[in-house]
Length: 347
Length: 256
Ligand SMILES: Nc1ncnc2c1ncn2[C@@H]1O[C@H](COP(=O)(O)OP(=O)(O)OP(=O)(O)O)[C@@H](O)[C@H]1O
Ligand SMILES: [Mg+2]
Image 1 (cartoon, rainbow over the protein chains, first blue to last red):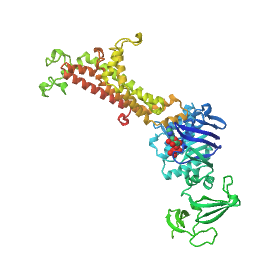
Image 2: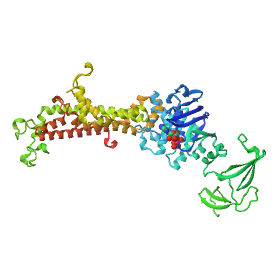
Image 3: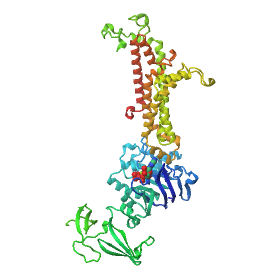
Image 4: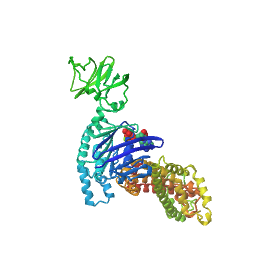
């Protein structure tokens, strides 16, 4: 339960500039997801926050307490930051039982024996793994190990919980179960969580906020819905959403009252109130632009519905997948994807 | 097998078999070429056995402990200057042949140095011990670093975040996990020290004879039977230690 503020964080590995001027504010109780392709610096960000790596520039505060002040070479010790980290590999100690793994940090804090017992069992109960307390990590399944790793992290009641792709080693079904479990944990404990993933579905389903990373920079911070409906650039639009968004070449023309967009789909005018006017838009001059069209926004009719925003299209391919059907359509030379719920055949 | 023969090379018929090389006394020697008591009645042997046990156990324990320690430094400091430096330094002794190496020691320690600060070590057990340790150090630290490499850094980092300091991490995480690798590193140097010859031959004085040197000596004196008996003793000694180490570490061969 705390507010974390990172400002102007720079991290180099040798010559390699891995984090570039990262600014991030995480409000108390947030479930903040760091999302981005492999190698963009998500793990590095977690390691900087947790204190396992030292940033070369920038500051970090937790609840207004200075934790990192790189210019003064001040780095609070990891264990004094009031946080805990679940590693992607879980990093359970193989020579300790589940109970001992969870109790380790508490013993170091010199907690009393009965208190340790009680705290550990509470953590194990929260993660629903009490019955495995005497087992060794290699006697547990991946999902169970992951719960132990989380139990170990929450036993010390951290104000901030860092999770590094904790679900990536699990099979698809277990992953969905664990997603729900993590969401429940977040709700029950109210802990601020920073969650790392490169899986956009995970990010969209679990987070209250998403920070989108691109090559060591944060390109956008928004709610899942905000990110989905208002991506900041083409890359963000492309990265979020499955199946991918359709991009359609178009010509724009802005006359000060509305944006007229011409494409293979015909002509459409966006009213001024739907436009983001803080960006530079050439006025009274045609310019190249790209239309983004989410596949689920497309409705398909077999007969003309006599609506002004329809365009005749041909079905190119059809992929029924049970709960939904992917349909590839063409309008003139332009190919695009539409998604329809349920089993749609017939075309 | 030769150790049970009277004349080596005379076959294994009953008339050519004897336990003399093991337990015989000089008065009742079955052949004039024997000039020593049998092994178990020979005080030289007793002392050599003692020396070998002492030397190989102490030297290999020390090399193994330091090997693990330096292995830790090199793996955790990989890419940092101290890790690289240590890694380079450790391999210097490896590049020299044992005899040349002990010759260096011989000239270094045959008289007091630095105004008596380093006493003349020639002929002392300490010198032999020192030389054996340095010689086997590269292997031990290699085995140490491969052992440490198997202990993921994240295990230690997880302990750091949970509040463990350096010594606590070593004690609660690294040592328990390094135990088996430590034993195999120990056995590695133990076995080669137990049968070490060329390195320490130059530094030997009768008081410090080890089994392998004694065997070498006897075989020079036309007593190959006794020398063979000694070799068998060495092998048995190694096997016994191996068994004991096994008991300690569960299954050492698993971690090898
Ligand atoms: N210890 C290190 N030394 C040098 N470079 C490193 C180190 N750790 C990471 N890097 C580099 O930093 C960049 C960011 O790595 P990071 O692990 O943060 O990526 P990530 O976003 O977590 O990727 P993934 O999704 O694959 O886990 C990568 O280009 C990587 O090569
Ligand atoms: Mg990562």
